[in-house]
Amino acid sequence: MIIIAVANQKGGSAKTTTGYHLATDLARRGHAVLFFDNDAQGNATTWLGAEQPGNDYCDIVDFMIDDRVPLEDITQSCKVEHITLVPSTRDMQGADFQIMDAMIQGGFQPPSDVQGNLDMLLSRRLRSIPVDWDFCIIDTPPSMGMVTRNSLIAADCLIIPVDVSHMGFEGTGSMLSFLTSLGEKNGKKIRILGVVATILESQTRLGASILNNMHSYFVELLFGAKIRKAVKLREASAVQMPLYDYAPDDPAALDYEKFCDEALARLACQGFTIPAPRFPAKPSLQSILEAKAARSALQQNKLAKRKKPSLRREAPLGEPAQNQVATPVPA
Image 1: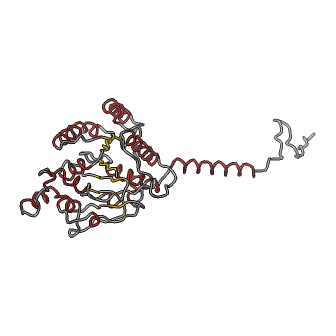
Image 2: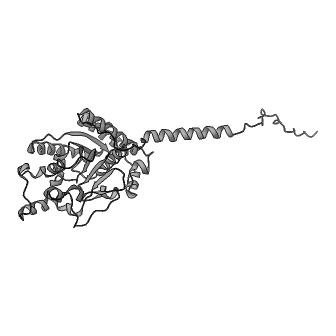
Image 3: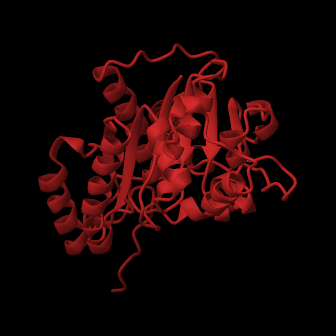
């Protein structure tokens, strides 16, 4: 199972949208996906057609600190086929406090195999679960608290969505510095699979300028696929559908499909073995649109053939048309 975290400490970077569409695209390709919604806002949980559980429900924090909580106790099915969801809960807002309080009250002691390092709790538990999925996608909160740090250490690689704006681009430097220090603290190099530009308005001068700066700064880290701004993404989330299904001809849907293609190619180049699909794959958006265009062209051709040619001959200027009697001129 390949574990991919999607993280950015800045809100509004399309982090959840990117993680959601990466997971749903992998599911469309026939892969079994385990999706962790580790963001207390629960937007991915809602988009996947589930509800945030109540306070009596075991969540990711319980799973991290209590070995008696199996993964099955925190997972549920969702509206998207082949995705198993670990939903967000409202209690996760105070995850850091919850873990520290459990330690103070004596209900939790860090396991000996993590040597007191609280950033390793999720990684430790994920190593013990059965491999019933091909991919695990982790959506993280827009902060660098304990849940995010655990998600980053547990992941095999990281994808950083960056919105194409001045504030979005400027805030990435501190994110990269944090990743370096977090990796050094835990003796692990956090592997960045890539940076994906989101909410792109390339038709504006500002958008084009910032994108050019991103190319210069990130170089090969920047994905070739850029996610264009799309109003239909909001509509798709409101009806709890992936953009692939809600508006397959929307440019952003094609952008996310290309992004997933590229992510899989990068994983393979970095030495990961891409699991074979477990289920029949759905047709790609490109093939769907090509088939739609072909059907439209065929229909237009049929309509053109049905039109009967006109028998009326246009007469030269000043002459009566064919089959018309010339009006006699009075003497």
